[in-house]
Each structure stands twice: as C-alpha cells, then as structure tokens.
Length: 105
Image 1 (cartoon, helix red, strand yellow):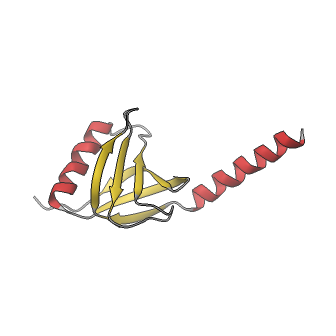
Image 2 (cartoon, one colour):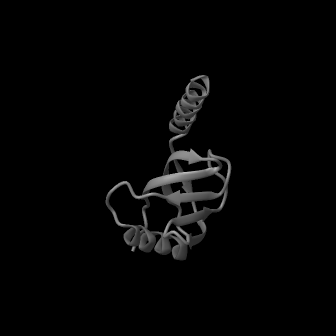
Image 3 (cartoon, helix red, strand yellow):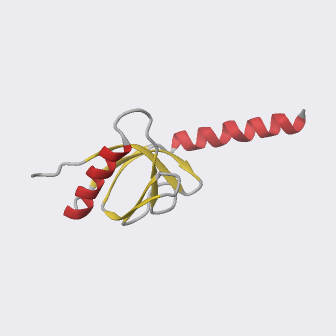
C-alpha cells in the first residue's frame, strides 16, 4: 500500500511540475525529424525551459501532423522564428501542440 501511495504521489508531483513549465517560446528550427513511430521531432537553435533543444509534437486534435510538418518546413526554409507552446516536459524534451508565426509571403 505504501508503495502504491508513493508512486501515486510521485506521478502527481511530476504532472504538477510539468504543467507549471508550460510557456510560449520563440526559436528558429535547426532540423526536423520523423520518429520511427511517426512522431514529429523538432530541434531548435537554443534550449527551452525543459533543458534541451528537442521538441516533440503531440497532436491533441486538429491540425493533422502533415499540416504542422508542412508549416514547420516553410519556417525552417525561410529561417523564420516560430512560436512554440511548450505544454509540458517529458524529461528534457518539450512537448508542444500549438505553433504560431508571422511569415510574410
């Protein structure tokens, strides 16, 4: 019982600290990778509040991953700064579901 309670408290503590780290960051893209599991991984120039240059996209609903990938490739090509909303951390990886930019066509 004590082990279950300790594990539950650790999980709640981890979720709380991850939620407290949510913030918008502005960065340029170093490179983009597709994980073997279909995950979209973005490496930025610089670090974010989770402690690394890696951001993993996790779709919460819309837009589909292909739309986000297309937009990120445009930002990368133009070397434009992108606004990422880092929702939480998974270790030192940032998890994001929203991006914004002010690209001028």
